[in-house]
Image 1: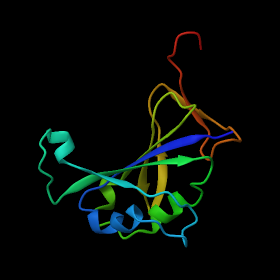
Image 2 (image 1 turned 180 degrees about the vertical axis):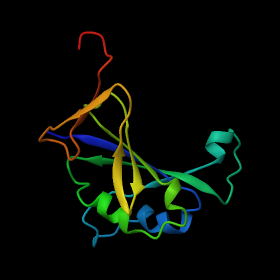
Image 3 (image 1 turned 45 degrees about the vertical axis):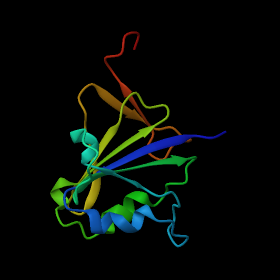
Image 4 (image 1 turned 180 degrees about the horizontal axis):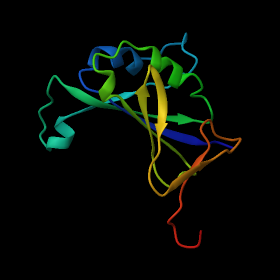
Length: 133
């Protein structure tokens, strides 16, 4: 059975750091590539700029093992701006990870709880304010 997980990386001035992750690399533990989302998408203009703050990838199955460790090891020019959003197919919403003391740490989101689930790497994030819970 296939599973999918969507990952969005947001980071200022990280074009050079993220560029290798936009190309296939058989030496990485995970093999998907990120797609650069230029800021022109947000501005609604057709003209791309030199700056990009967002990269997206969709991972199939549990094949993104090692991604967090890889991201933690990168020489971020502004590590305080790095945000990693992760949504597994069973999550109610994206979870948020930020770099604290060199490690990606999940930031608690009000009215959510994460429960372990063996088919995912991070478990399942559920809204606690959902009717019927």
